Image 1 (cartoon, rainbow, N blue to C red):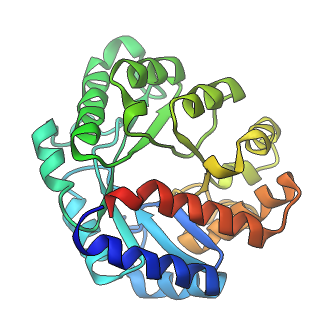
Image 2: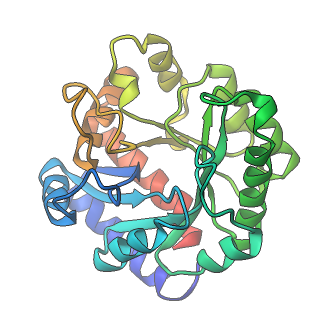
Length: 276
């Protein structure tokens, strides 16, 4: 922990547990979908008992807007990274990511990872190279990883192991994989984050995975503006809706929403504590 961050985060944690329940560990409120700006979103968060949100980078081109949000609002954090599905984005190198991660509002590297949904594995060597760059930058900067994997779990886990991702840790965001993949990520010291997908009617298998993830390694997110949870499915998502994810997982685990919110919020601040 460096500088003012250590002094700031403790009061924020205390305020969180006194007045609110949930943290949105992954959103994209810098996207053009949010034409109304941050103020209404923050009001909705407060009304829903959502204290903080992490606005996650998908390209270097969008990073200035994310940093502006995080600088203007004490309860919004930022990450730095280039999404694996953005082939035409500016390609980062380790030194660039490490330098950008020095910004005091940046708490993580990512999102990064592999996505074979739209392109065959054989056609995306550049994705695997980019992923390795992000892992190396995370290890050098000391900031945890936000990992995206879609139709690529085996390669994602293999590269994580080869590059020593477990030495820095992080989160498997918007998790939709099997229990076996979750266990492998947990073995490497990663957290598992669930989005609104876990509330969908056809997500019974994913709910089984969520039920099994240890409480001290669990995070919740919206991935907004995408994947709005029930009862908002099909609408634009926003950080306030993370409450629905938390309430559903609390029910799965046989605990109160307050208990689930407290645990996942504590996990969030512990994971990103070194990086603030």
